[in-house]
Length: 253
Image 1: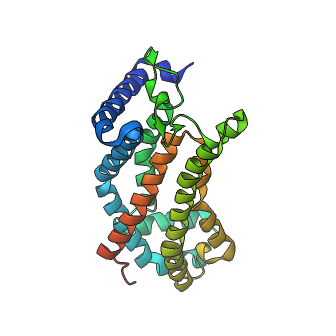
Image 2: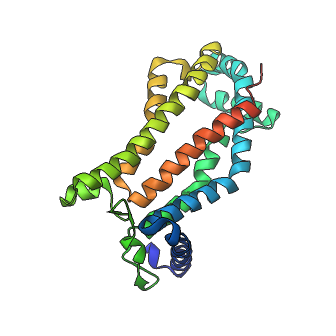
Image 3: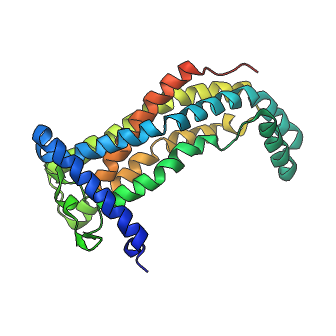
């Protein structure tokens, strides 16, 4: 069964297609052939602006987790050999504090449908029965529907296209490294203070560091349009986290 052919999905994609093409048409007199790429950037910024309250909730949850870190470490020390008891006591502690251990997942979960729509818009040759003209749009001469991995596999990658892909993907990786340095080291200090937290182990720290670059790896395989969405998202996320960390500094235990 073709999920994209289902009437509700097809109608959603058709509306998103018309919206992006409409924005691109408005921007074209000012930006030219890259107007569709600019429209994606604008849509991404609008989505992230709508999600600001979710980011604030996440920042508050991070502050609460930092304050609870010593108590969580104590629970792990006492109930580490009884996972079910540990889970129960941990959830009870969060419930008593009016917090959730899963709050950090909300921004990405909220964005997933938008990213899925953008991904579909740049892989489907037809949408709701009409040709997908978004596939003809470009950024720096590179079709927004192409990917680095796909271009390499098809043997169509040229130096100019490679440069565009590398700029986008390397920028995502760079932002990931900055995020790791700014927030990973702070997490290290907080988990060190709350030993024996699992996050304080060298293996866990290396894993957290690698996780920062998964978005860059994903950008290798998705269409350039989706990679552009990811780039704007990680830049916004870093800036928002810096501002919210200042507005909601970690609480003391």
